[in-house]
Length: 495
Image (cartoon, rainbow, N blue to C red; front, side):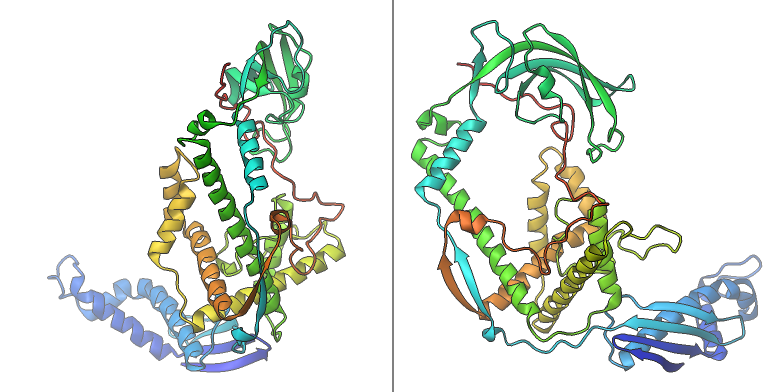
């Protein structure tokens, strides 16, 4: 094998690799010897087929297998001998090859940058903490009571108004055809709650029991069901009953609705829940501060291909109107992300329609993410930080439990999709690295209010990207409750 380095530019390396025809021929002959004992051809005993006949019959088909294996092994050997660490999957381009001739190919790769060892003890962090107080618990109780309030029929024959709970039957159709999830009987809908798609509830205000009407609405463009997005729909609706909400007394009986013996036990449970929420917020704020500190360390070049892929990911999030285009797991490998691939030469550029300012800002954010990811990965590699299978399974079970009734399907989805499993493992790995660094950093503690802790912190550096005027800003998903026109009736507590 002959290897010649042809390009050395920053993190980019390119080599010309030549494997002689004799070496390829030797490898084919070795492979033929391996399979010969297993061959069974008419007129020959098993394993007694003449070598010349074996080569004539199977040599050509084995040649492709041998060439592929030779290219892969030679590429890895060329990198190993030079102690090079690829940042992304190497690119291989066969220049020339024909039977009986040398195999020549180009090997191009981007390398991991050199990241100098970090002195974690020199990092100073401020840990923001807040405690759950009586006011927080009282507010949580009131919110809980609001969610579980009962209702009773109105006492007069008046028309419906905002705040009322109308009991309705409805059948929805698009272009005259009924659609799945568009019908219900005896559904309890609180007017003004925005449970259904925009425009639905407003048309039920001012109606009396027995009213029959056509509720005409248009599904949002970013609706959860693609076949309904942007479509005009008609719901044949009948008002069966009008109810008004009744207050619920917060006492020991209220606590029993949640399996508690007394109100004090419910208050304790809410306090624990609030403290867990605050703990997660403290952890997130500390992690954000650490990442900002890491970015201030000595800069280094990042692989252009990784930066490009991250930039595409951000643009794709904007185009898909996702809720938060600046949120990602830093340590999740870019080349493992579904869809994050170079654009086809004839396709529309992923950033078409973005302003020059947006493009510049997204590029800066992409480079920041990649740089921080590489720093964390290097810390994890040098300190042998790993995520165990048991930790992944626990996280997977927690994720699956968020979909009651669909646990089996969701579990199978993750088990059959390596990229989905990577999305479970990546944040665990990243958090373990962050905890490792934090334990050695100088951390001071500062007490603040719950409101201050939960307030939206300063955005990802550079400033959070804004969609240009030609692009819609990522919007919160809207649904017809709000992902289906059909909603499970609330359990009403009659007085």
